[in-house]
Image (cartoon, rainbow, N blue to C red; front, side, top):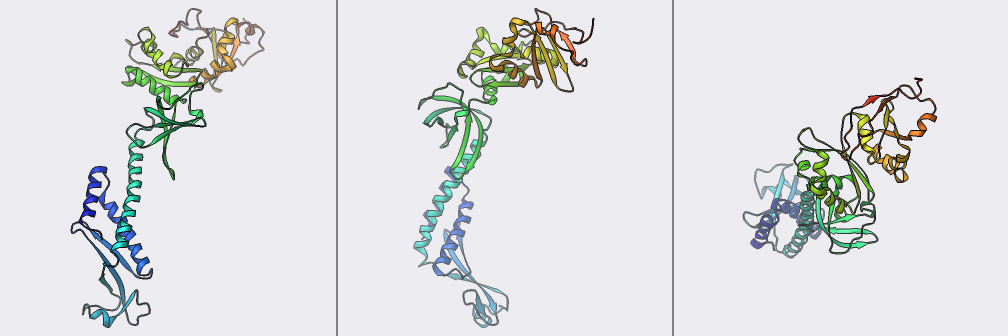
Length: 385
């Protein structure tokens, strides 16, 4: 039967695993009551009560006092009830303590099963609660196994593994069991199979966390990341900004002899990174976002959130990028639709909407840091000079 050692074991679980003993006791009472009813009849009204202070288990049956007994398992006559207590009246509930001798073995088996099951459930929930704090964080993990392209990694200090699907991996990456791998925790969810942690190396959150890890000025807020546009395995554009005049955001991110940015590129499996200094001026921002291409002029239509960019003929393919990659990433980074035209196309172009605002940028305004010289207004395309 449940004894002092059993209650001591519950105390130990509470101390070691931080699992509330009261939760165990409530679950046990429900399970033992169900087991008792199965043994003596489902119709019987009974309740099992555990008392940790006295290390006891008691079983109580309940019967309602009636004039005429129709269900002996749930009802008792007034005459019989008054043999127990003279003040009883019709409608009162009579509580009687039942013998637990025959129930002892079943109670012990039930208690063991309930404790083991509840222990697993609560350990899983505690692990989920602890890991939920790691959502949107960067973790160093160890590759546990690889199955049909899906990589399973061991989360440090837990019994839980992370799942990295093929589309969450950087294209071209190869993993081996035992490899140490940095991953970004994308989502944590609880399923019938247990806690599942979805991790990734392909989304922009992974890049953001790498910048925070390698660049203290971003981690402490002196430099902020305004936006990130990424084509995993190929190219990423990151716009950075600082309000502190004594800090060069691009140079700080690059680091001495390029050490900081090289570390990030290495972690991204050689993925190219364009650092763009953010500006509130959309014309300048769009021009910078098309780096490394040189831009001659930018015109915008605010109502359509659209822009047209003019580049030298020999820089057109660079501005557009392979399969349109460069202009596509620039559009994501700035939030503007971008159409790129060559300089020679400017003279042969059909008349455009005169509501466009056209601004020319000086030839030497695009150095490696993306700085722009003063902008000069041009006549909108379609007007006669």
